[in-house]
Amino acid sequence: MADGPLHKDLPLPDYDHLPIGTLPTRINGLEEADVAQLVAYEKAHGNRLPVLQILEKRLQDLRGGAVPSGPKSPNTPETASAPATPQPASTPGPPVNPPSQGVPTNPAQPRS
Image (cartoon, rainbow, N blue to C red; front, side, top):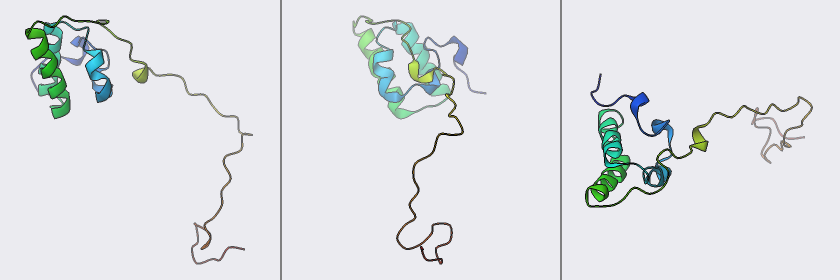
Protein backbone atom coordinates (compact mmCIF):
# COMPACT_ATOMS: atom_id res chain seq x y z
CA MET A 1 0.00 0.00 0.00
CA ALA A 2 1.27 3.48 -0.86
CA ASP A 3 2.37 5.88 1.87
CA GLY A 4 0.77 9.27 2.19
CA PRO A 5 -2.38 10.86 3.57
CA LEU A 6 -5.61 8.90 3.58
CA HIS A 7 -8.47 10.00 1.35
CA LYS A 8 -10.73 10.67 4.35
CA ASP A 9 -8.14 13.11 5.75
CA LEU A 10 -7.89 15.30 2.63
CA PRO A 11 -8.98 18.96 2.80
CA LEU A 12 -11.15 18.63 -0.34
CA PRO A 13 -14.13 16.26 -0.25
CA ASP A 14 -14.20 13.77 -3.14
CA TYR A 15 -10.79 15.01 -4.31
CA ASP A 16 -10.32 12.03 -6.65
CA HIS A 17 -13.53 12.81 -8.52
CA LEU A 18 -13.06 16.54 -9.10
CA PRO A 19 -12.59 17.66 -12.71
CA ILE A 20 -8.98 18.77 -13.22
CA GLY A 21 -10.15 22.03 -14.79
CA THR A 22 -11.82 23.08 -11.54
CA LEU A 23 -8.84 22.24 -9.31
CA PRO A 24 -7.10 25.66 -9.43
CA THR A 25 -10.18 27.47 -8.11
CA ARG A 26 -10.89 24.76 -5.54
CA ILE A 27 -7.44 25.03 -3.94
CA ASN A 28 -7.33 28.85 -3.78
CA GLY A 29 -8.72 28.88 -0.24
CA LEU A 30 -6.40 26.19 1.10
CA GLU A 31 -3.44 26.85 3.38
CA GLU A 32 0.08 25.73 2.51
CA ALA A 33 -0.16 22.61 4.70
CA ASP A 34 -3.41 21.54 3.01
CA VAL A 35 -1.95 21.89 -0.49
CA ALA A 36 1.18 20.00 0.62
CA GLN A 37 -1.11 17.23 1.88
CA LEU A 38 -2.81 17.04 -1.53
CA VAL A 39 0.59 16.87 -3.25
CA ALA A 40 1.65 13.99 -1.01
CA TYR A 41 -1.64 12.17 -1.61
CA GLU A 42 -1.44 12.66 -5.37
CA LYS A 43 2.15 11.41 -5.53
CA ALA A 44 1.24 8.32 -3.49
CA HIS A 45 -1.96 7.47 -5.34
CA GLY A 46 -2.75 8.95 -8.76
CA ASN A 47 0.55 10.63 -9.63
CA ARG A 48 -1.20 12.54 -12.44
CA LEU A 49 1.23 15.03 -13.98
CA PRO A 50 -1.32 17.79 -14.78
CA VAL A 51 -2.71 17.61 -11.23
CA LEU A 52 0.76 17.67 -9.68
CA GLN A 53 1.70 20.68 -11.80
CA ILE A 54 -1.36 22.61 -10.58
CA LEU A 55 -0.81 21.64 -6.94
CA GLU A 56 2.95 22.28 -6.94
CA LYS A 57 2.48 25.68 -8.63
CA ARG A 58 -0.02 26.69 -5.95
CA LEU A 59 2.28 25.39 -3.21
CA GLN A 60 5.15 27.40 -4.68
CA ASP A 61 2.93 30.51 -4.79
CA LEU A 62 1.90 30.06 -1.15
CA ARG A 63 5.51 29.62 -0.07
CA GLY A 64 6.32 32.77 -2.03
CA GLY A 65 3.83 34.82 -0.04
CA ALA A 66 0.48 34.27 -1.77
CA VAL A 67 -2.51 34.48 0.53
CA PRO A 68 -5.31 31.90 0.42
CA SER A 69 -8.46 33.39 -1.06
CA GLY A 70 -11.89 31.91 -1.42
CA PRO A 71 -13.68 29.24 0.58
CA LYS A 72 -11.55 26.67 2.38
CA SER A 73 -14.03 23.92 1.51
CA PRO A 74 -15.74 24.85 -1.79
CA ASN A 75 -18.93 23.20 -2.99
CA THR A 76 -18.50 20.22 -5.28
CA PRO A 77 -21.83 19.98 -7.13
CA GLU A 78 -20.46 17.68 -9.80
CA THR A 79 -19.65 15.00 -7.24
CA ALA A 80 -22.94 15.18 -5.35
CA SER A 81 -25.16 12.22 -6.04
CA ALA A 82 -28.54 13.50 -7.14
CA PRO A 83 -31.40 11.05 -7.31
CA ALA A 84 -32.19 9.92 -10.83
CA THR A 85 -35.42 11.19 -12.30
CA PRO A 86 -37.27 8.17 -13.66
CA GLN A 87 -39.02 8.55 -16.99
CA PRO A 88 -42.57 7.23 -17.23
CA ALA A 89 -42.92 4.20 -19.50
CA SER A 90 -45.27 6.15 -21.77
CA THR A 91 -42.57 8.69 -22.71
CA PRO A 92 -41.59 7.98 -26.32
CA GLY A 93 -37.96 7.98 -27.30
CA PRO A 94 -36.53 9.80 -30.28
CA PRO A 95 -37.55 8.56 -33.73
CA VAL A 96 -35.28 5.95 -35.25
CA ASN A 97 -34.62 6.23 -38.96
CA PRO A 98 -32.62 3.39 -40.52
CA PRO A 99 -29.78 4.43 -42.79
CA SER A 100 -30.48 4.60 -46.52
CA GLN A 101 -28.45 1.44 -47.23
CA GLY A 102 -30.71 -0.80 -45.12
CA VAL A 103 -31.81 -1.79 -41.67
CA PRO A 104 -28.95 -1.45 -39.10
CA THR A 105 -29.69 -4.81 -37.48
CA ASN A 106 -29.62 -6.60 -40.85
CA PRO A 107 -27.51 -4.72 -43.42
CA ALA A 108 -28.29 -7.26 -46.16
CA GLN A 109 -32.02 -6.58 -45.92
CA PRO A 110 -33.12 -3.62 -48.06
CA ARG A 111 -35.29 -0.94 -46.59
CA SER A 112 -38.97 -1.17 -47.53
